Length: 503
Ligand code: NBP
Image (cartoon, rainbow, N blue to C red; front, side, top):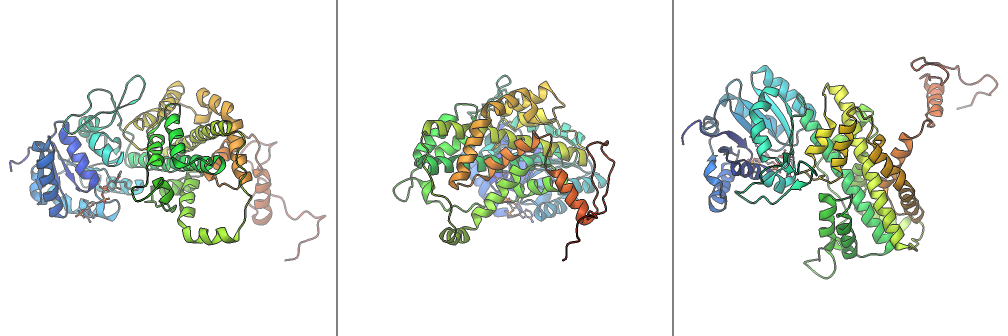
């Protein structure tokens, strides 16, 4: 093997690494690949030679030293290995083969605090580090993911041409994703769904919030499906057709599109629709939990994102729920009288809730940037979620437009477009939630998004009483409305004219 002739290297040949490597090769770059278990490299190279038009630009290695020697200096090496300790082990094994100035790009789903730590440690040793979120699963990695890099700006200057080449592309005018890539023939033109997001963990944090939003987006769609099934008595095929119809309007998105397909899928093992045979216990890999935990820690009101995580947790208690269903009674479901009106109301509830869920995600990003010293560009973030990733959606362009109109926008719901949608749609959104509640159909995502909206638009909330309770039992003090913020008062409780409670 000639040394020094690969433009970039990649470690980790599971599903993401294989596909990203082929995407890079499709764009004319020579890539060296390596995997801890050598047989995976051999299998991948055999497949590559058989089926991939760009395989002449993929160089497979089973020896780490030979792999690193094959990469042009400063080396750029992408890691697509399991997040957590495996990423640290991979970096440790790699360092003895690198030289100062070489660049490591972690494309895994790393926790942003790990990325901050790794960037610090590697910088101290003279290496450059980028933590880049990669979204879009297998197909995205192969034909254009959304790429969310953060870290060293010097390293970004080296990586940028490759990242821009392989990222998903959107139409510069409409923001619509450009599709149609096939192996060996990538999409030409368009705006790439990648941009430098900030130092150290900024990219991985943005990717994590993307995943948190993905959780709530999915939960909202599930609740719309569940209402149509329970209140309208529609079968999965009919609901699938409705989602397909909705996909032509403002809800147009990858998740609505695949939901239409999924619901219309017949059961390959019997009669009826597959969805009716699938166990209702959701799994999770952790990025939704990380988002909710970060929101709690930063005091950012991302209640719907947290609800989406809890909804999965509740679903996972399948056996307990089956038992409880025999013991706990709710109201009998009253079928809806006007199905067309209810469908319209559910569609409104879905869109309004989605707007509030994204508002929460961006509010969380806004809190995080203060804590971690980043300067995130929210319009750009919405733009790079327009293509390649799981939450890609037409309405993300509206978010980009909103931040273009007002870069200092405090909350998405205050933008004129979103404000109008919420004003126009809120009565049907409320009807939907009220109907769900009165029929005993759980809608934690719809309900929590509405509570967020109502809480955010309230000049007064009952936290005055809460502050007094805190002062009563813990002398935590309170502020007064007739004094400037920041002046704290305490009352010697209990009031003298009230008998002391015996405990
Ligand atoms: P996995 O997350 O399943 O990881 C498998 C890879 O990690 C294999 O190459 C494996 O090598 C390697 N690895 C492990 Br496990 N332990 C290692 C160690 N101690 N040292 C070196 N290598 C080790 O692969 P994936 O699903 O392709 O995902 C790759 C990354 O991308 C992950 O961080 C994931 O969270 C992220 N991601 C995945 C998706 C998706 O849709 N799957 C989407 C977006 C991001 P081996 O072959 O020797 O065991």
